[in-house]
Length: 129
Image (tube, rainbow, N blue to C red):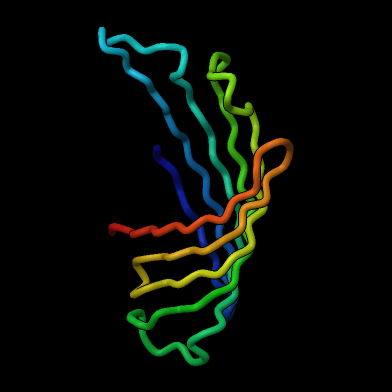
C-alpha cells in the first residue's frame, strides 16, 4: 500500500486528509494469482483536538487528543471475493495519544454503514522519516 497524508494545524485543532492505493494479492502455490487478488483505494478525513498538554513546549511531549474520522474504502477491480463489499464507509470517534511526534496510539469505535458490524479498534502507527 502507498499513500499520502496532508495535515493542517489550526491552534489546537488538526485536520488531516489521507489517501492511499493498495494491492491485495493471493499468490497460489503454482506461482499464479487467483481471483482473490484486487486493488483498493482508501480515503479518510479526520479532525483531532488537543486536550493535553495545555501548553505545548516540545515535540517530545505526549499529546492527548479527541478525534473524529470518516474513512472510505473502495475496491477498484471488477473481480474480487464476494465476502468484501465494493464500497465501505466508517465513522470513527475516538481518543488518541501522540508519543514523541512519531508514534500514534488510537482507541476508537468504528461505526460502519450497511451490514458490516461495528467494532472497537486499537491502532498503533509509527512514522518513519
